[in-house]
Length: 209
Image: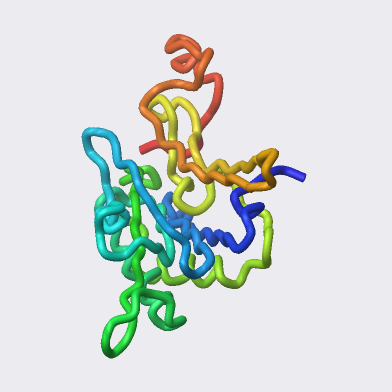
């Protein structure tokens, strides 16, 4: 059986995407078990993130209620609001007088216009739907890979190759299961591929606009 992030007990993943009619983008939500402690390391010259500062170990709330990965660049970060609304409805969040405040950090990739319409990007409703899809999945369910969810419009090497979602896990000798999920949307080329090979079209990425 292929390893995946959902090999970690309690982790669930939901993908939502739209393809066609100008669309080539989507959103992925990772739902951890209640009380999961979160942390973050943000790098790069143009990070598109939402509420990642809340994961600093010096801040008030150490836990995370959902993690959102999305297309749509900075516009797509609104999907976190949808996932947050879903969490609030489920009473998942930091308790405050009168209710809860879900802690939902998010990060976005740049895929604007890859389906043909620059304005076709994930919205709050898609974030809500992806959170629901994650919750509806079964324990240790398989996780979609490739051009699904936040990886729908991902590319590598300026569009020479398709990027996408990847996931894996490993079980340590201690019995601890470590899982990972990545959305690869990289400027560089895959290891071992030269620029002339890419220009020759060794892999067709699908729609490019």
